[in-house]
Structure formats: C-alpha cells, structure tokens
Length: 176
Image 1: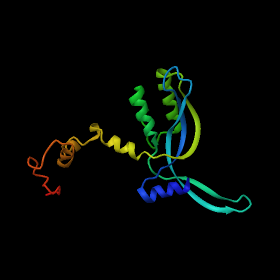
Image 2 (image 1 turned 45 degrees about the vertical axis):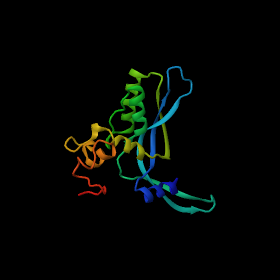
Image 3 (image 1 turned 90 degrees about the vertical axis):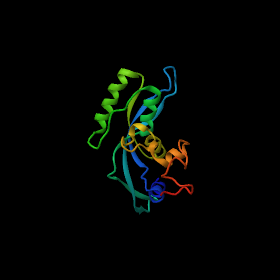
Image 4 (image 1 turned 180 degrees about the vertical axis):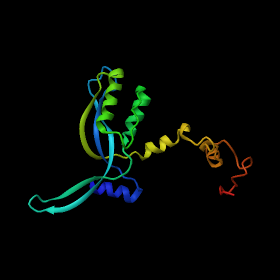
C-alpha cells in the first residue's frame, strides 16, 4: 500500500490513499440476497514507514491526515444518484463522521429501509480520477460565460464546425 500510494503521487500527482470510515450495505434490488459494502466517508491520509522491528521482522508505519479535502465516496454517490435516485448529503471538512452517518441513516429509513450504515474502518487505495473527468463533462458544472461545448477546438472535435467557418482554428490545427 505504501509503495503504490507513493507511486501514484509521483506519477500522477494524485493521492489515492484514504482512510475509509463507515460503509453502506446496499442491495441491487429489493429481492437481492447478496449485499454490497461501499465506503462512505473518505479521509485522505499519508503513510510513513518507520523503523524496522527486528523481532517482528516488519517495519512500523504511521498514518496521518494529509490535509486534503475529506470527501464522500464519489463513485458511490454517482451510483446512488443515477441508479436509485438517492442523493448523499453534502460533506465538508467540518462534518464529523457520526453526524454524516446519521444523515445517511435518516435518508435510508425513508427510501431503503433494508440498507444499513456499518461503522467499519479500512485503509485502502481509491482512485477517483476517471470519475472526476466524467463529472467535469457535465454541462451543469461549466462556467456559464465560457461553456466547454462552445470552445472552438471542442466544437471541431465533435464535428460542430470546420476550419472554414471557425477563424480560431487554422488548417494546421494550431491556435492563431
């Protein structure tokens, strides 16, 4: 975990090491017998290798909060919104895990009474980079004065314009 987390930071600049607090036990359908467990509260952390303990033959590690934003499980948030019409509550740096779990419990009681919040904890690698790119493509998040779909290069890539009717792009595909 230590090596993969450090490699991600060095290669992509993204921290993918999170302490996952609380898990949602959810089901694909009301008659499903097999449930899924998905983390809810994601705290970005750093792992530091310490000294070697010779008698145990292992290194000691310490974990600390990285200072980056605490986030909900973005993949789960989108899955619940898209497939079940359930919106996870907002989460900010001031939201305590138990308060967050309580809000989710209230939502579940009203919408999915068989689903449960489990107070589990795990350390793991969670990569949200592809989902973040997907979310960036949502027109609702674009600047109203400079929407991405109006950019001349994007228009050309999507087949909306040609070089002849777009003076911002020359035939060599270079900016002028």
